[in-house]
Length: 605
Image (cartoon, rainbow, N blue to C red):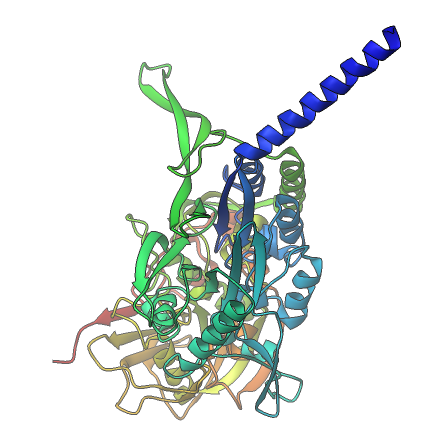
């Protein structure tokens, strides 16, 4: 009898346990949650990182049956934490955090097509893109990736469609999409008016609908920058029918929820989280009505005020919370497994690159006081410093260098001051491009400056905006832009209506004066393979240039080499080894606006 009663008690407990589990499951919401990120750019060392997003997902799984985690591109490049192993550790973190899907941003191609293939092999989640395809003899073949993935979420059949910006050709390197003969073997559809991208998106929507999808969400790396016209997310949405929402990236915009009318007149909810893990996006799809809501999960600092030795108030950060109207889980969470992977990798990179090589009392920056990025639309002191580093490299080697150029998109840092380490240099130049020296004509140089300046003064950013050393130039911002490009955004010829760039002057080392550019003369130009050799940002005017010295030093080491050229490693304008050798050269790092090498003014009436 005692044994029987014991068995019955065990059975009752077991049934109670199952009843409890069933009851817990019954309380879970049928609504579908999508957590999303974009343009993280390997900024993993802040308080908000992959360990926190993993914790958030785990918390939400206590409330919802269906929780997905997706990324809209540009996650493997941006800081030393990405470039040191070409994104492998970032993919490990994304795997551990529980990502379910991603699309390719333009920077997923920064380590070459082999690097792009590698990250897809490392990933335990699929990549999708409806407009990235194989090409042969100018003919489109099959897509490289699936256009979409369908997730079965109870009664909701959710299709997520990927899209990749056609700007990837010029905002990574066109050569990565070509074979050894220069023939394109990969394509990303765009169209002169965006029609090819839109057609691919519509085809994917139609296929997903035919497969039974009840909700369709775009996951695109397209952006809303005017410079990305005609391939922006809003243009794409406006020219397709059947989308319910669109999770965007590329332009680093913080868009919590914006309604954009589709081709059929139906409202499509557009959202994007900004950049650098500043926030996490959260989308909730109502399982019964199909209504969609979005919000940001943002970081809130918890502070306390104390007194210092002089009795002054000092505010200290003592912790963090997560704030969101949609997220109602624990206010601060971090997955221990993901945190351990992250912390180990940060420590390893910091150890490799942590050696201090110099210092500065100046502030090298690319942003104004309001946080607006300047380096892609005007001169900055960091852009000048990077161009000077190239000039110094070849001059210090005893080679004849006349001018150097540095594209603004290759200068990635925010404010830099105090100690300078190899890691600091890696945060300025994250791509791993290599310095080259070429002999070009004055005409080629003018065409390069014009191409880089084609949007200057009109409020648009351009990663190809050129910072210079050993020369000065002016831009007439009122003059119409008329350079000619092909359908991939690569330069074809100079402007048809005259040059916006004028009054170009080159520093003469012998006279110490700046002299007018001679279009027929030859000049030795220093730059990186990205711009000079690989058609980066569409710079194709250097075809036919004579290579003086190729692939000399990686970009961040070029900066480190220049820093170490300053006496005692103390970086200031008066201490520059270039200024000591060439007293007439224009060099001043005192303000973010640079030395006055580039003048942008409205001249044309």
